[in-house]
Image (cartoon, rainbow, N blue to C red):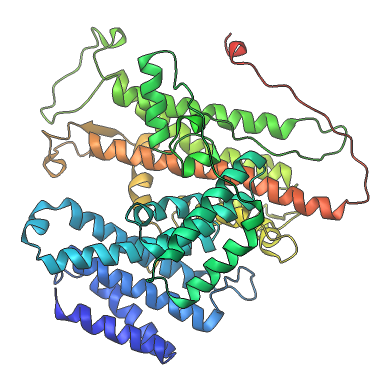
Length: 513
């Protein structure tokens, strides 16, 4: 391990202990330079990125008490963006170190120990940052590594996140299951002597607060389908956390292998009708259809009769053609359209006043349309979801998810480094020419096809799965956002009378034409 790692770590601890904001800022700047330097290996760069992230987080704590300010007058988002970016770079380098067999072969036992300890700390701290910006499901996903390793701080943090997830969930049955598991994890964490005193106080307080509402979780066994193909598909969805079901963010039991997520009850004027539930049903259908088409493209790659007698030249760079790969491309395109569909929903639900042709996942977070034909919106959505009286944690999560999807930059780098690959792929699919190559036989740098954006099959499949997780997260956050907003509206209209209108389930056997 390079001695500079220990030097920066000592200075970072000292600066925080002494509440030295200027030194913390200097360390962050130093780490930003180091992680792009070839003088260090991937493990060292991962640790430097982690040290930079924690130093930036400590700076945010000292200056802002760790509280985000989203208003135009007191906005500190860029300071939190920098911390997120550095955590993401840390995890990116940890992943590279793990996958590079040459690095791992030459690593010492001490290096492996540092890898284990710093990776646990990085994933746990990053998850806490994600939760602070409303990225609730993403936060739970990041904590799984630490929970699997029984890292006490990850166990306790997961417990807190699951209980918070239960609090904003409209499904009372799901809320109970999440609450039970959250309490169990907190109690498991408290057994360890390695939990620091401040965390122990928080964990104990939460256990005490919910103790009268907790019971034991029991899960019934459900069938995953009537055929081997259906069972394989549902198992794939389950273990990749792809069901539209808030329990599938954490649980992998057959009972949660279904897409039961929908909107909570919405109170509207009598003449409005169930339009929001109708749009949400369409969102779900587009997502689950894209999910299956992608799965089918990945797993059913044998020659298909539709590809017979379609003459093509062999360009000698091992391209992949056929309906299977096109299914994955179709699914990729469809997943991206979900974000603008959500923007359309929000424009109607909050009556933002954006003209239909101007609605997008980027524009809903503004307060006006700019330019020659500009106009003011009727409601500033960002201000609404971040004001104290109407604060909406999952709504804030949607806003920060938009920062990723919309390619927000920090220090001239994408806030989420993985978004760059998704953006390039989307641009190639929509406006250029994307060529997928055999992962084992083709080297991208040797491609002579200058018209194409070339990518190997394994990378394309991985990117598509990542995009699917983003789109699922957006749909889940939308449901949670509406639930929180309806609670706010209930307080305002408490004296008003309402009449309940029920809707029947759309039967599976009707899904044909």
